[in-house]
Amino acid sequence: MPYDSIVLGKSILFQGLSHSELEHAFAFFHAEEALYKKGDYLLRLGERVNRFGLVLRGTVQVSMDDLNGNRIIMANVSPGGTFGESHCYLQTQESPINIVAGSDCHILWLATSGLQQPNHEDAIFLQRFIAMLANRTLEMNDRIQILSKRTLRSKLVTFFSLLIKRYDDDSFAIPFDRSAMADYLGTDRSALSRELSHMQAEGLLRFRHNRFEILNAHHWHD
Image 1 (spheres, rainbow, N blue to C red):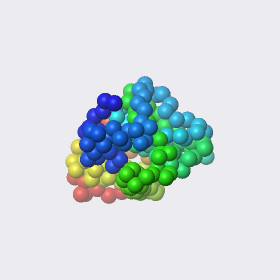
Image 2: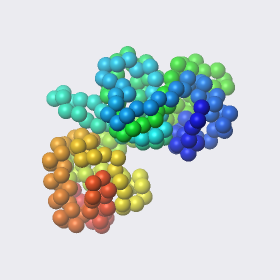
Image 3: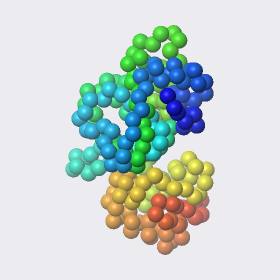
């Protein structure tokens, strides 16, 4: 199976494994590759969850609808990231989320059946899988920090602060267009565009499309 060792190395499941160990891991997780076009559904709300995915190329968006039918983007998964692992491991009968290709993408599908009763040799995969779930919990804490803010300005300040910390840089590209960014922040596109324009006019940031530069971040307040 061809693979990108750099991308796989971003995943807790596969980092540091030799070629032969990777081949064994692929067999253990019953790995299968698939290609999708932008906008394709990888998993629809209500479908059975029997595998999880690792992004080899492109991006996928994990979303759900609120009580009013508005889309909320829960995560944007880039190469090396995974999605659907908790629902797969818990053998969720019906998916509570939608997973859509955010761009043309290449996915490695993996099954968790071997994790239910792994032998001694394969116990390392269960340990790595648990570590991956723990890391996902930390990521969701960041998400909660954003959504718990009462104002859009506060959400943006928190969102950009987390990105500065992640990239260790005041300049970065975000993996969203304006519509998706609004869905991620739990607002509407018009309100988001207005607030970004206000922040740019105030000299807090500069942006062009999905590229942002944060100015004087240590002086920010919400």
